[in-house]
Length: 288
Length: 269
Ligand SMILES: Nc1ncnc2c1ncn2[C@@H]1O[C@H](COP(=O)(O)OP(=O)(O)OP(=O)(O)O)[C@@H](O)[C@H]1O
Ligand SMILES: [Mg+2]
Image 1: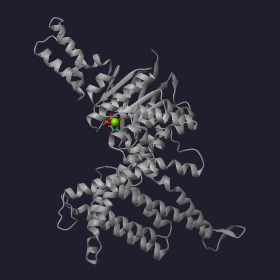
Image 2 (image 1 turned 135 degrees about the vertical axis):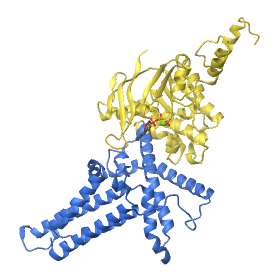
Image 3 (image 1 turned 90 degrees about the horizontal axis):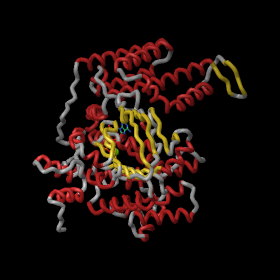
Image 4 (image 1 turned 120 degrees about the vertical axis):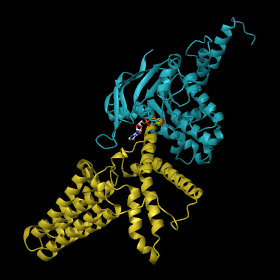
C-alpha cells in the first residue's frame, strides 16, 4: 500500500494578527493510503472542514506540507488547479451551490472546467447520474425544482463527474431523512467499490463511520486525537467520550454487557460481529 | 479570502472609547466632519490629526488593521489628489504642460484634500470599530426619534439597518463558502478577459441570491412567529444612558470643533 496523501506538521491559523485569531489545526501528521475508505469524526469545531479544505488546496497551510503522490501540492498555481480535479471535495450542504438552469449543465460544470470534449463530458454526466441513482429524465429539469435529497445527490454527482482519484465528502448525510441517507451512503460505497478510488468521509454518525471505513481519524480541538482501524478506535470508549464523542450503539451495548459480567470482546462495532460473539459464547451453535 | 474585508468590522474591546454611549460617538463623528470642513491650514489639520491619533491609541484598535481598511480606498484618494492638483485655480504657477498648469495652491489643495479624506475615513472606522452594530443602530434610532413627528419611520429604518448589518458577516461567510465550493469544481475566477471573468461570477451570484432570499424569508417568518409588529409600545432590554464620560466627550468635541472653526475661518491657519 502506498500513501496518496500525506500531511507533514500541518498548522493552520485563521485571521492571524487580529482579535479573531484562531488556531484551527495544530501539527497534523497524517498519511492516507491509496484506495482506502477513511472516516473522519470529531466534535463540532474540531477542525474537520478546515483539514479537508487543505487536501485540495483551497486553504493554504500556515506551516507544514501536503504531499499528493509524494509531491508537494503548493509548488505552482497550475498544480493546484490540476489538483482540484484529482481531489474532489463535496462540501457540507452542497445543494446550496447549484446554480445552472438544468441538472445536466450543473453536473457538467466540473468536467467542462477540466477542458474535456463534449462527448467525454456527456459520458461523465450520465455515469455520475447513474452512481447517484437518479433517472435520466431529471437531466432537463431545473435543479431548483428537486427535493432536498435529490438536490444533494445532483451536487454529489457534480463532483463525481470529475472522476477524482480522491473523493472527500463533508457530512454528506446531514439533515436528510433515513431513506435518502442510506441511498447516498450506498452510492458512495458503490463508487468506492467500482472505481477503487480513495474516499474520505466526514460524519457525525458513529454507526456510519464504523460500518464504512477501513481507517478512522478522530479530530479534537484542532489535533489528530486518534487514528486507526474502527476496531482499535472503538475499543477506547473512554478516550472517545473525553472529546465529547460516543461509540456506535452496538459497541455501547457490548460495553454495557461487559460491565454486567458478560465476557464480550472490546471494539465490536457491527451488529453482525456482536451477534457472532454472543453466539460463540453459547457454544458456537447457531440455529439461525 | 474575503476575510480581509475589514471595512466597518467591529473590534470587540473594553476601552474608554468602546464604552462611550453610541449617541455620543455618532454626534462626535458628525462634529468631527464639520470641523474637517471648517479647517483650512496646516495648524487646524494637525490638531484634527492629533485628536484622531489620541482616540485611536485610546481605543487599542491595532493601527495595522485601520491601514488595511484604507487599502481599498487608495484609488479614490489618488484620483481626488490628482484632480485637485491639476484643476485648482492659483497664481503661483510651478510649471505648465500643454494647457494644464500646476500651481502652488493646487499642491496645497491636493494635499489637504487627501488628508481630509483619510481623516474622515479613519474617523468613520473608529466609530464602527468601537461600536457594536446593535448599539450603533440603537443610538441612531434614539437620535432620530424627534423626526418621527414629521413622519419619518425611524424604528423601521433602524430595524432595517440592524438587519442589514447583522447579515453582512453572514453573507460574506456564505460567499466564501460558495467560492470555495465552485473552486473545488475547478472554477477559475482569476484568468481571462473581463467578459470571461464576469461570466465566472454567475456560479457565485446565483447561489448567493437564492440563499439571501431564503434567509430573508426565514427571518420574516421567525419575526412574525414572535409577534413582531413594529416599534410601537416596544420596550428595550438595554436602555441607553449618558454617563459623565459622555458629557466630557461632548465638551471636548464642541471645543475642538469651535477651535478649528475659528482657526480655519478667521485666521486661515
Ligand atoms: N473562515 C474562518 N475564520 C475564522 N475561524 C474559522 C473559520 N472557519 C472555521 N473557523 C474556526 O475553526 C475551527 C474549526 O472549524 P471547522 O469548520 O474546521 O470545524 P468542523 O470540525 O468542521 O466543525 P463542524 O463539525 O461543526 O462542521 C472552529 O473553531 C471555527 O470557529
Ligand atoms: Mg465542518
